[in-house]
Each structure stands twice: as C-alpha cells, then as structure tokens.
Image 1 (cartoon, helix red, strand yellow):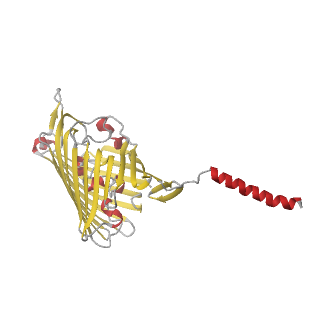
Image 2: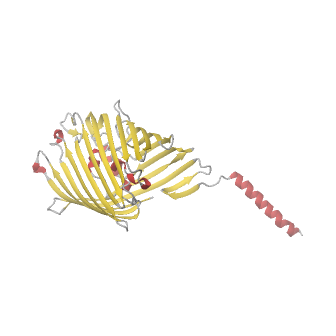
Image 3: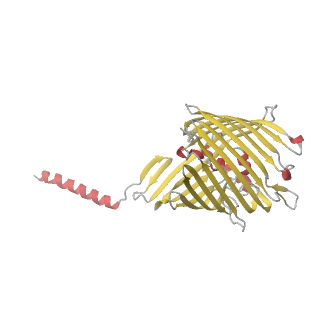
Length: 398
C-alpha cells in the first residue's frame, strides 16, 4: 500500500519541481537559418543575424604582352568579413555592423591604420517606402560599388570602379521607393563627412550625394538589380537606369573618401551613370563615371606630388548563365585621365574574359578570368606597357 502511495507522490514532486524550474529559467532563443545564422529573443524584440565570407585568391601578372615571364604573384586572402545585422525592439529599427580582417580590406596601405570597421549603421523604416539612417556605410554611388563584393561575377570589380568610386562615409542617408503606374523608381540621398571610413575628426567641408534609379519594367526578382549575373533567370526583361552626383568639399584624400592623403585640401565632383539589363540568364551592365576638380594637383615643401585622378571611365560587362550554373563573362574597361594629370598617370584599358561556377549562388562559387591590359602614357609614349593577368578565386560564405 505504501509503495502505491509513493508512486503518485513522486510524480507530483517531479511536476512541481519542473514547474518551479521553468519559472526561474528563461526560454531559449530561437535560431533560424537563411542568409546567415539568425538568433531571435523569446519575446521577438531582438534579432541578431550573423554572416561571414572569405575570398581566397591566386593570380599572376606577366612582364609584358610578349614576355610571359612572371612579374607579380598574388596569393592571399583578398577579403575576410564578419557581418552582424538585425533589429532592436521593433523590425523598423534595423542595425548593420560589418568588420574586415585582411590588409587589403582595411585600407592599411593608404592610411597606415587598420580600419577594421566597414559598416556601423542604424536605420529606421518610417514605412515601407521611406527609411532614414545614421552611421557609416556605402554612399549611394555607382551600381558595381554598391553591389556587395561577395555578389560579383569576376574575382573583383573593374578598374573604373577602383579609380572613381566614392565608397563609404559617415553621415545621414535617406531612401525612398515608389511606383508611378508600373514604373518603379528609387531615390537615395546622403550628407556625409567627405573624409571616408573611421576618421578621427572632420572639417567644415561635407560631401553631398544624390542618386535616382529608374526601373521601367518593375523591380528585379529577389533584388537582382544589386547582384551581378542573372542568377534569378528573370522570366521577363528587366532594366535599371541609375544616375549619381556627388560633391565633396574640402577633402584631404585623392579619391575623396578613399585613397592616399593629399598635401592640400581640394574640392571634387563625381558624376556616375549606369545601365543594367537581365533576361533569362543574360545580363548586361554598363557604367560611365567622371571626376573633376578645379585644381587636382597638390605639392609638399619637398616637391612631392599627390593628385586627384581627374578623368573619365567606362565599363561594359556582359554574361550568360548556363543551366548547370556555369557562367561566361566578358568585360571591357577604360580609364582616361584629363589633360591636367596626363604627365602623372596613364590611360588604362582592360579586356577580360572570365568563367565562374556557382555551387550555391554567390555564397559558394569558383571564379577565374584572363585579362589583357594596355597602359598608355598620352604625353610620354615611351612608358607604354602591355601585360597579361590571370586570376583564380574561391569564395565561401553564409
């Protein structure tokens, strides 16, 4: 009889103990797997999404077009990024943090300082059409620059982007999108320091950037206007046209927000237009960029020169994605210096043919390309040079 009574009593004690324990210990957070690893608080008031990616690259450059002896070898981790994003209290209050950990990715060669922080942004969505953000992130510049470096078709962006992009800055940014009938458009604007990433202090001169994007046939599938290649295989033709203007006043760097430090401060303006077309695996992207400055050359007391690359660039990139996710890409890029700096830098043209294999979209892929480069000094032809470049890269990320 006693044993019969002990059994239900033991069960009751276990249930009571479990109830007390449950009241003292908070529920575990929820985990999700999508674009990265997501962690959601039990009350759904906080979201943390964690992502990483790395690009491992091997490349060679020849002495000249006829001398195939190796002039330079590149073997390194080109990019290693760690990204955190999510919301606090409400999905309308969004944050973005991105860190970089390789020398080339920290602007160390230009600034002699390890700039680990790439993005640190807080964004508030007023409604589904309008957002406002404060912090450090990419300015609304040319499309190839705003595209993530993890969403490129070839191992890296073009020389046009490398010469004229406006990259990241700290400031206030506005975003608005809407329809005019079936005509979709996006407006972006920014007021920023004009000094680039992670500056200690700024001056009275600011940078003012505005961009308009037009998509006459409606939005792209899955945000396809901001990743390269037609991985979404658009069932209907899609077109995007973008125009950007940026005025950077009293800057102290050769590229405004990027590059080495000038010996004297200068004003500069950058004008950008781009065109994008995608349809059934075909993609065509074109960009035209121009930068000017009233006086692009600066000197120090020892006679050393640093200058703004005032000039014009054009980039054309076409591709086709086969059914087994192999892609062939062709690119032509040209950078042309204006007369004021033609004794200081050359005109560069590149002809590139590449092949990529997408194993899991842009998150896991193999990339390779071959480039023929022509360097022409417009006022000193004796320095002209031609060479070949071969690159291979593997990218892994979540």
